[in-house]
Image (cartoon, rainbow, N blue to C red; front, side, top):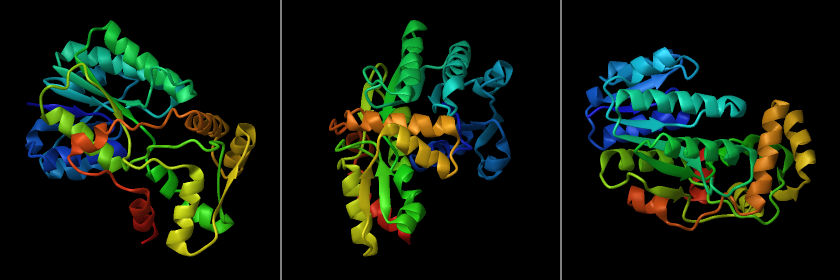
Length: 285
């Protein structure tokens, strides 16, 4: 049984490969793919099959997916290229005859109104149109999205956002990767839609309070209009388009589009999800 993981050069893909190996999948049955495979040479040294897969190059996808039984399709990052990339990958998976495509979507992708959700929803629709045997892994936000900001939070004594009192069901990348591995190594998931999120949702004000408690420093949450948040993110060095997308995502958070109390994630991984407090503590070590 060959399991192909796209984006293995990225954080989530790499963690998914490691989770598959921990679950007992032989290294020779795991295919780690990426556009530049130099960063995953160490996986090849451990017996994992490493192949180049460029979403803009259908021939490379055909070669990467050859002989695959299952595919973990990790959504690509560039928003305006995402749907085209996903369609090419889905077409290649169909041509390869895969028995299951597990797609990392976004919470409530069928109803959410953010810019990010629109591309996920279109990908889900394409999977249905092509009648691909699939399972939807609708991931909420990563805890790392917040812990990566800790140096700036501590520097300025503030968490900024445009989410109001909205609650986010964030979980660690490792939790989401483990859930993907569980779905790929057990039966009965075809056609399932999993709304995946952490057990303990939190507001951004609660995020600020958690950081304050962990550091002993006063940290406040400042709620901004979305355009002002985008300006602040651009001023911090983010590209303007990405800043706009993230500010728009915060508005979605405020509407409850990144919240789920389904319990799907902890059920799939067989344990409680990583807490915000633990993630902050780990990041501060």
